[in-house]
Length: 334
Image (cartoon, rainbow, N blue to C red; front, side):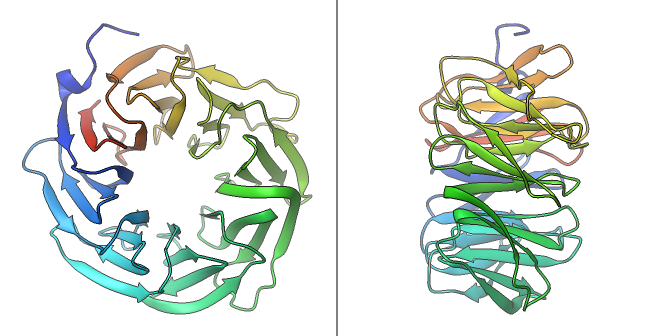
């Protein structure tokens, strides 16, 4: 590491969030933290942070609204809400069950909520249609164009064109319980984190199976670099970064292992323009590492909870992080 002082003390600010952070998202130069106590905290690098009361229970999922000006949140109160940084709160849907997953696309304008065995599609602020699955939805992902939806469930993933209400879907089969889900930026790969501490993937359109195992813990966090050449994952004592080049993707190729420490990696986030990876750990520490030379800088020191939220601003100049103990930070890396 360069130096001995965490970057948060040099060019950052510490935030007392008051509750576990489930995710963090940037709207311009403001970070919005979705919290386990039903609130959203909006904060900038400077100035007073604002607390917005959003739900009647924990916020379980969140995504940027397609309009680019609000945050969409799903709670264990069964509601989907749109949260504006100025404190405005709009209820978009009342689904009567926990909203475990949310994805949205600024390209297609669609929002999809994962509730039980269904994915519920919202357009223009209201419900459009629903897709049914054979078991509970473990994860949702939209492709870069916001057209194709991947929903993981027991024994695989179902791909559908999200705006086509009667799409019967394409099945990607693999035995076992599939949870967190991601689609590569070029739409050529679908990858899931599985219950048994492994990843499974498919190369499209051939549905070629890809197996990535050896993890000591479940992979819950994925991040792709801008060009889709690398996929970073949590679930080990270092960030496991798989190469996705050539026709076989990561098959037969060793991954990079970045930022090895005794603590497990719990969150990863690629810089929006550069091959630099932010890594958060189970002890609350965070670092940033360049892939080219694997040099790193300490962003934050260990705390009392695992890093559970990590995101770069769109211009790549600032990083926001939050942990399970309610500690947050915004760091200027411009």
